Image (cartoon, rainbow, N blue to C red; front, top):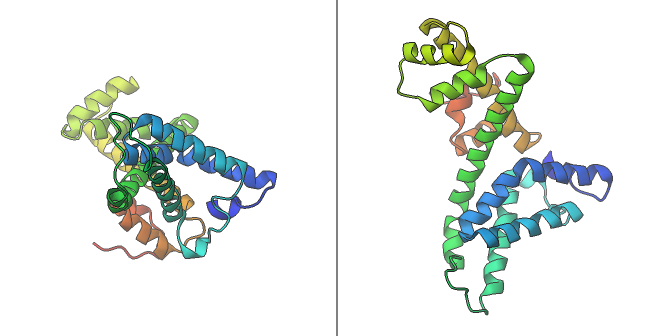
Length: 232
């Protein structure tokens, strides 16, 4: 689990914290930017977060995976960094054009903002994993699914024409439909892997609950372990 692996001062713990930063750096920066609406402040907060995380396990030392998922812990840590920044600025004249929000407003919006950013990042990670999987296997799942995602209103026949041009070989509408089904299944498995990785050692019920909370259940329903019971 991310929090457990990153605790301590050994090389393995430092590597685990570095891996956390690499995997979730977009979440951290985008959250700071959304909350402060100031690029310079967001960059400063991100740099402080990265430095603190890499140098020691102070940020995650007291984290207990049994008491909450990594997503919730990270959200709390970032939220308090924003609050600390606002409090530090409270006794100083605000620079012209500053957009930092009052503390109450930050607290009110923080949860929904973070969940939205976290959800999008998991989807982005799954897209990148799908593209990398195709590069290794020679499949075209990413190409097919991206084509349909970019042109949701096109009929299968029109998508097949476009896909034929991209792949350099003929593709019928029926073949396009089959390719889309396989691509969606592959994407669902990769997205499920990303969510499971963020949870660590989670039971199937916890995994399903996290998918529901993030509004990702519809993407992954067919890829869920058989022990999960999903609503229709």
